[in-house]
Image 1 (tube, rainbow, N blue to C red):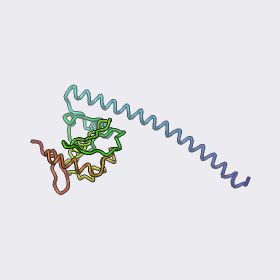
Image 2: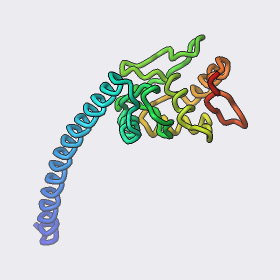
Image 3: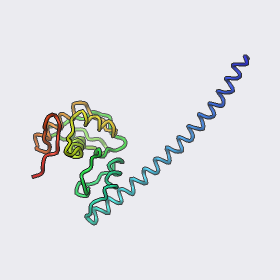
Image 4: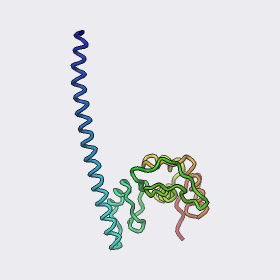
Length: 178
């Protein structure tokens, strides 16, 4: 066998061993991350449950962490409005959803994501800056929620009809409460 080939074969074996070690470590760290994430979610849920029992708002730090990890917090327990994305389960469905006559999601996934409520939450979370349908699509993609490109337009139209949101210059805002 050629000396160069032998040289490269030796380097290949070393690189292959390094790759195997890196993959092993990635698996270990991935498992650790999953365990830690489960623990954090459980603790957040315990905090939310206790706050519900004593009817006190959840601290802002907890609200932010919960929203980022997909733990839902009732609006009456959120001390201040947040600018974060509405919670989305880690394994959101990839099927497009369509609104029925009432404007509710005709195909809610097993995870319990109601896309109409999620979009309404995104509008509410946008605050005074409002939000556009393309921004909703980007936010959904960032949070792992798959929705059809026309769906925000359909839902926002239904929410406009209901008086839940208002529109100004192509941006949507949460309607003032009466």
